[in-house]
Length: 214
Image 1 (cartoon, rainbow, N blue to C red):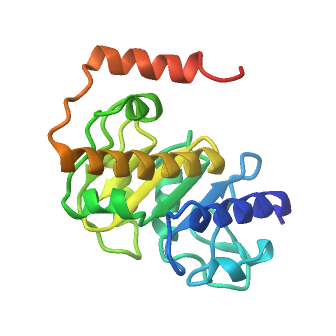
Image 2 (spheres, one colour):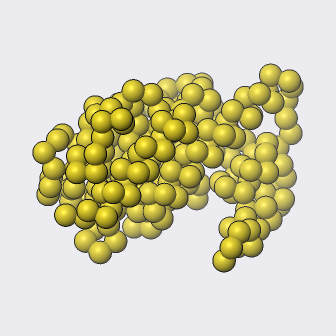
């Protein structure tokens, strides 16, 4: 069932340790199938080096396991909550990447100090409140605080990103860590200035409508 989507999600999972976004078994990716509405997600506590496409779990939006012999991610309820509240989202990623999570530990959003932040996120990367793992609470925090951004920090926890596909959500997770690292380095040198809102809007429009091959 959904073998092509499982293969895609498996390949994207391999990018998380390759990009330095996770350690050991932390983090997870899910993807929603547009045709069936079913969700493919990483199994809980499986090492990335040992993960196989067929290990991924297929669920309904209500959490019923349709296919899979392994227990799904401990963040499953939050992923499913996000999908139920955001019909536009077809990919969700969770990481504990170090620099972004340092901001999350302080409960601090990441302001638009860089053109890369304006490009990818269209504004500051917000920071949601604290929530316990295992239920829908984290998903509620994500939906309440993420706004129009593809990324949100979770206080004392880590990073959640969303996208129209799992690949887009992974890209956002990579970019969150990249800009968080640069901002942290800049803060060691002094206090950066935020980019004005009109310039942020112009940069984001260029990046989303002009940049790249259309």
